[in-house]
Image (cartoon, rainbow, N blue to C red; front, side, top):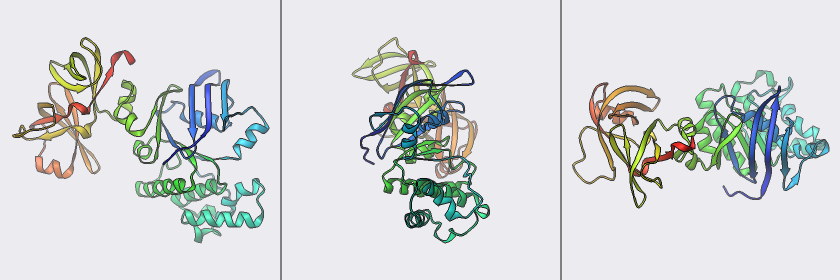
Length: 366
């Protein structure tokens, strides 16, 4: 997706709730057509940032601009909010028909009856609700209610839609179908979006940018690949699924080819760190390969260690295998590979990973 001009921008934003500072964001911006996901643990400030971006929470300090113009109070915010929609965790539908629920935002904005009817029909169709216009909102399934909530938000055809965990408490098939439909429709409609989610696969699938928050601050912001594969510190590495995080020290660096001492062994990696620097070696489990014997031919994996299986757990289509290589290491394997390898606890195997699969972080950053 190609992004355009900056829509929304904040600077030096601080928010207090009950006398406690809950948000301290130096800067954040959202561009046209951009999809930003906010991730982080409970209490990180994600929903607070969302409400502040909509002007529903007052900032104690800082500035908010919309298309380069400072947004003050009163009429300023009213005009800006008309260009926004929000979808909450619960649909919060009115006790009336599906049609009236979808039409509610349009009536507030003063659209004529004809314009409203056309807009409602359009968005009911896009969300697969065309045959439900006259149905009572009280008689909808959870997935149908979420679709009505989405159609209501999209029907105002805003420049930005904010989503606060809109698919929580849905079964996996319904959730996947809804996210796929919403993602496609959002891109077709050329709207910007900000999503609060605890589902990292959801963020990875839909986002052009991921923002990691903790303690009311933005810790890292970047493309999904950058955040997942190059976390800036140990907290982000843990949060985005770097199952293996090892403390070590650089013992050599030759043209960015790093050798790090970890638990009495050496690990090859790539990075700028120099001998004597304390670092973390972070390895994603999907980048670790398990074999029954050492490779007989050339291999691109610079790191190869004898290992013992110490724990196996199911992750749906994959299995998580924890290994003891003299240091802890985790690998994900498919069920087919698991069967072929005949893995079991205490089995002796070999574990390998490429030097380029090791992400190094300075311990000074934490």
